[in-house]
Image (cartoon, rainbow, N blue to C red; front, side, top):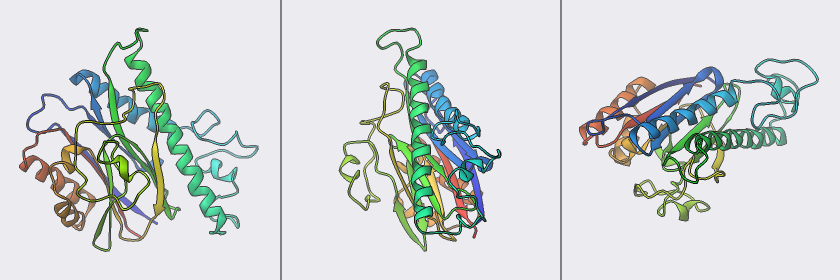
Length: 281
């Protein structure tokens, strides 16, 4: 299974600074959008720390990495953590697509969730580095996705109202439910409505508390799927029917650039950030 990806963040037409950060790391199978909150400097720092923490978590291959099993007895390298599970692609165990595939998906969700929890710790510590009860109002949303070229499942974890959409066979699905009063009822109930309202009143964000509840899940991946990770500077300004229309167009770059163009054309009232991921088969 092959993928094509593209990412960009735009300051928009109203804000003086860009508090969003995107992370597009195909070599790590990791894709991230974070939307910072606080004073313009603090929001930018918070979102940058979140992306950095997630990249660091997936850029190490040892027992110190969040979510990894204990250090291996054998071998090293980018797939050694799979060897610890008996799930190296191409092995007999990997070809057992039943319970083994389910176990792998579960572990990937756990690993990504732990990495987001580590990101929360870093942002919280930075905001409270002077030791006061509340020293800086610093926080960020995050949506992170991991999907490997050999995998048939995609894992995600999110906090806040940055979203993950999927277009499959012309049908748009919102895979995440915002941490807002509108999104909370859909935490356990599906499907999440495409017209889920946006609001700046979050019920959860990274860096606000020492611990954070991370919403996470996984889903099968099919040839032709298109995934969109986005801050609300895009999804709050581009209606779902237009998102579906654009996601059906051409390359990841063509899709992402057109979504940003429409967000700016519709007012550009917020920072706008996208990561587009296409499954090429």
